[in-house]
Amino acid sequence: MDPYSAEGELINIYNHFHQGQYDQVVDFDTSAFSAENALPARALVLRARIALGQAEDVLAEVKGESESDLEIIGAFAEYTLGNTDVALETVEKLASSAADNVTVQVVGGTVLQAAGKSEAALALLSQHQGSLEAVALIVQIHLQQNRTDLALKEVVSARSWAQDSLLVNLAESWVGLRVGGEKYQQAFYVFEELAQAPATASIRSLVSQAVCELHLGRLEEAQAALEEALSKDGQNADAIANMLVLQVVSGRDDSQYVELLKKADPKHQLLVDMEEKSALFDQAAMRYTAKVSS
Image (cartoon, rainbow, N blue to C red; front, side):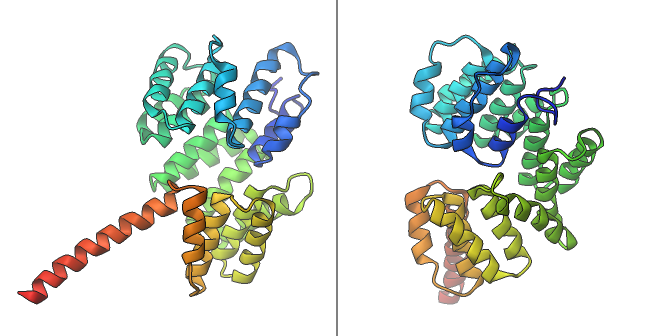
């Protein structure tokens, strides 16, 4: 039996992880899991701890471990701590020696994509054998490449064999937010259900709901969802980033949220994009000024 299927013993901890409920993952009682699922469960717990800012502790815990699942998580912790070269060296080694390991595929693919090595990430992830987590990451990479067609193809294929899986619903919603139109509302229903149900609510689902509201032009509702997310964690970078976007769309001063985002995550993609666009604008303005002066 697939341990991640609706009947599998890992389904609940797995869903907690992908709903962004990292505290629940860390607190999950894994003592009753079968021997074959003990390592995958531990891997999920360690990944959740990294997401909660405990990368140093995780790295210390897995140091010297020989299992590929734990080695790749050590590489992820290294990358999170800014040790990119060390992380990539381990990922590349495991991509050669343990490419059939699903944790290596997913976590290694995550590190490779974050390091700007999209093709290497896709090559590793393409070796999966029915892993929905690998499919979801492939979808995210294609969306970042602006290849909505390929992302949609992955979702359609996964839907044929995974039916109503949480990850398939999430991936389909991500694609829907890129396609637009009536897909915005469909994505909203998925994220709203997750955000409002006590068993599945998380900051991530609230932020996702708010993104849908923004696309649908429902600014007050978006603000309410983001305020709720920030009330749970005032340092959540994605919540702050989307609140910043909301200020811009609403024609309000965004300086407060720019500063908050710089403190929460100085390397957040929104800040990187803003700096790049500002530099391009300055370059264009200089060329225009030069022409006017001459």
